[in-house]
Length: 369
Image (cartoon, rainbow, N blue to C red):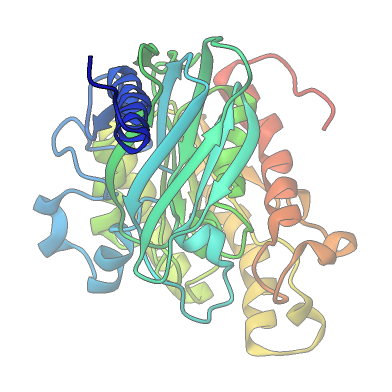
C-alpha cells in the first residue's frame, strides 16, 4: 500500500473539514425575506390604502386639487404604522427614507423609524448617507408571539423594501383595534409631529396607543390653512371622530373665513360624527406684543366662539378643547422653539386631548398619566 504524504493528508483533512462546514452552513434554513406589501403586514394610518396601496397620505387622484406644498408634504408617511404579530427573535428592515439636512426637527423623527413591541418602545433606526435604512432588532430571547408596530418617518417619502424574520417564524396581521373606524386629525406641523424627537411620539401616536385606536394624520407643516379641498379629502374618510387642529397656521381672519365651510363640508357627509376642535396652546410671543402673539390671543377668543355658533345652530356633537388644557403658560418648557411642541409637549398635548376623545368615543375614563 502506498502511504499518503503528510501534505496530501493535510489537504484532504482541510477540504473535508471546511467543506463539511460549508455544507452545514448551506443546510441551515434561510431567514425569511418578506417583500412589501404583504397581506400579513397590516398598514395603518392611510385613509386611501385600499384604493391605492402607496405609502403617501393623499391619493394621486387628488393631486390636482391640492396646494402644491400640501401635496409634497403628503408624500411623507407621518403617522403611518406597519403592524404584525410574529414570534421571531430577530427582526430586520430595509427601506429608503431620506437624508438629513439641518432643520429644527430631529433627524430621527424626519427620516427614521421607531419599533414598539407589545405596546412598548424597543428602538429606532436611521438611514445612512445614501438614505438607505437597514436595521436589525432582537425582540427577545424566546420564540414568543409579539405585537410589533413600526412607525414610519414623519418627514421623508419612504420606500419599504423588505422585512426579514427568522426561518420558521410566524407572521400574522396586526390585532384589530378596539374602534372600527379611525380618528382623523387635520392640522399643521404640530399635528404632523414636527420637533418631536421620534416618529412614534407625535401626539396622535400617543393617543393611538393609549386608546388602542387607529388614526390618520393629515397634518401639513406650515400649510394647515383649512382649504375646502382639504375638508373634502378629510370628509372622504369615515371616522370615529374628526380632530380639527389647524389653529396654528392661518391668521385669525383666514381661520374665521375657512372654519365654517370646513365643518359644513364634513357635516354634509357625516352629520352625526363627533368633531373635536382645538384652540391655541400657550406661546411666549403672547407676552411680547409680536404679530404672532396677537394672532394667538385673537384666535383664542375666535375659535371657541365659532364652535359655539355651530352648537347654537344645532350641532350637538362638536366640541372645543381650550389650548391651555393642552400646553399652559406654566408648561412653556414643553416647547422646542417657543412655538412647536417638543416630545414632552406632544405628551402633554395628547394627555389634554385624551379625556375629550374618551368621552366622545364612549371609552372608560382616562387613567392617571
